[in-house]
Amino acid sequence: MSCPANNHTLSAGLLDSWLRCSALCGARHTALSRLARSQKSLASKAHLFTGQDTSEALPPTNESKGVAQNMAHLFGSPAVKKTSFALLSVGILFAWMAAVAAGQPSDEDTFKQAMTEGHRALPDNPVQADKWFRRALALSPNDPNALDGIASAQRLRTDAELQGLRREMRQLLAVEDWGGALVAVEQMEALAPQSADDDLRLRLVNLVELERGLDRYLQRPERLGIPAGRQRALSLVAAEGETGQRIFDKIDRLRALLEQDGPPRAQLLLHVSLCQSVRLQPGRDLGAVRGEVALDVAPGDYHIIGVRRGYREARAQATLSPGETLRQAIVCDERI
Image (cartoon, rainbow, N blue to C red; front, side, top):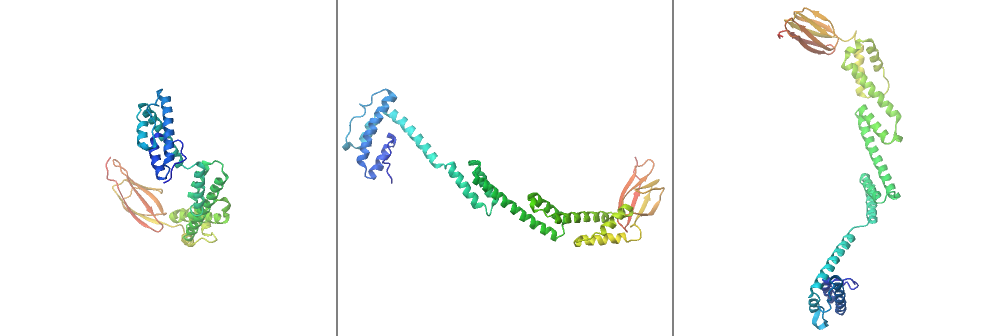
């Protein structure tokens, strides 16, 4: 146990503990001397607080009577009790404040700790390192070391994101996802403009537009019946360069449609009941139709409308693919 031998501000309330500590360390004589000085000091302070003379309440003592007798005389006076309580309260308050202050690190220590943690996390976790450096910068604004740390963390974050986007782009190119690969390239350009690959970007843009045009005519072959549409389709199948197997197969399919004798056709077998007239949209007015009628039409979407006086219009929709034959009934039997 260490003894507070140099503590000259002991209050009367803590004196007993101090004496026990001094006795254990072999400082009994020093303790008694401090007791006598504390008695005189407390008497003087009691007189200041109460205006009463407490000298009579503190009779002289000697070493043989022991510390207990001295303390009993010392605190026997009400004035001294009041003074001692006030001094003890103030002493405890200052001791608590000192303990709290001693337990809290300074801003400088916190700054150093934040910088240390930032450098430790920087190689493997630049995101966490950036947070530590920003915490340090908040404690010391414009500190060059904190600013350098933030810049280093941001560079490492950018490099890591670029590596991830490059891996993603290579995977998308391997499965011929040209649109997804183009998005990855655009994200890399936004993240680091100096990393832009103009040739790759242009190639991907052309592939995306080519596949989009092929799908337009493969999904709606009736557009080939329009001269402008047919001319556009011919330019698509004449595309050159590396396209990937998927686009190559679509070019072959569209070329086969273009080589057919005339535009592709489909057949609609329409069965009409109880209708006075029938219209086909887009197309023509079929007039009064009874039973089943076969219609040779271009592939596409059609609306069939049956009309009968006093009855609601009968409506149906039909979608035909190239070479398809579709049966559709239309009945006018719902009164208004």
